[in-house]
Length: 126
Image (cartoon, rainbow, N blue to C red; front, side, top):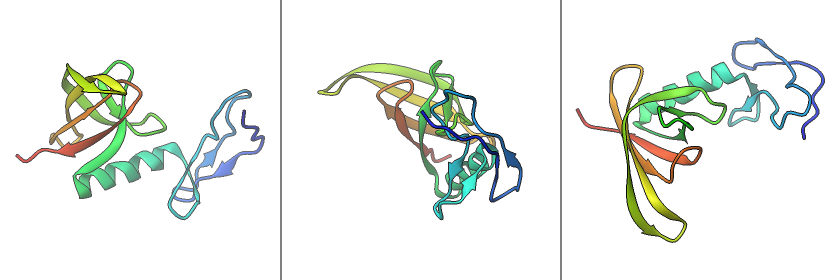
């Protein structure tokens, strides 16, 4: 359990980041590559900019399989179709194939173990 009692500020937008609720297992903020505290909204903006620039993003399949999110749960992509196929990997008997669309209408594809598990999404050629 993490105990943070004082609010802090986002290093990007300077907004106050309130302490997480008592008993929470999160800090309520992310850290950038220079270890500065970043609010979840700025974290989402950074992840979106990265995926648009590089055409690839490691993210998470939402529990309902309707969205691809970053670590704090910000929606990066909306799933348009998903299908589960049998697979013979020792750690994963089923493989989830996911097709999604971003905020600019571009299509993405990825495959992974399922909801809540990390997935690498790649932008598809037009």
